[in-house]
Image (cartoon, rainbow, N blue to C red; front, side):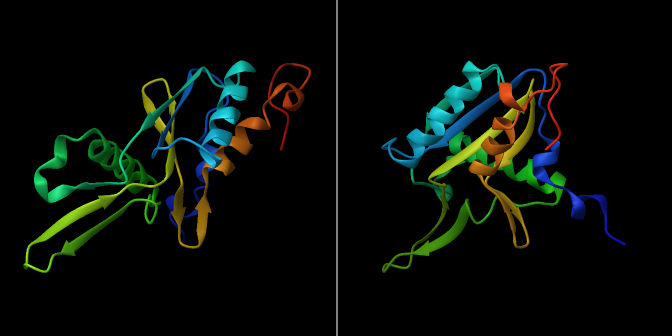
Length: 165
């Protein structure tokens, strides 16, 4: 018998009403596919589908063995991992923790951050992290934005409620 978490569709948990905000975290420079995501977020905000979004930049990687646990990127990763663990999904391999060894025998643990990551909040609650995955199934930032774009004006019924997919 499957547990409830095994059947979870991360997109099905996303709220379509209320105080939905999104945070895009990205490496610099912010160009190419990243600007496309920002433009899509702007369109969702302008249409009132989401309340607000923000863009934050972060480094390619953070050395964990240097006491970086107070680093914002590390704290964000830890929050995302807790969210994923509660749902039986993973934020890896987008986030990768590995040990690097130098030629002089010193090793260090490094957190590699994804090119882009999107957090979805409803009020103060984290309700979605993209990309995330379970087994062979991956939910991308594009999947998340596609789900919300279905709720643009053309995707609403006459009563203002979202139309069925």
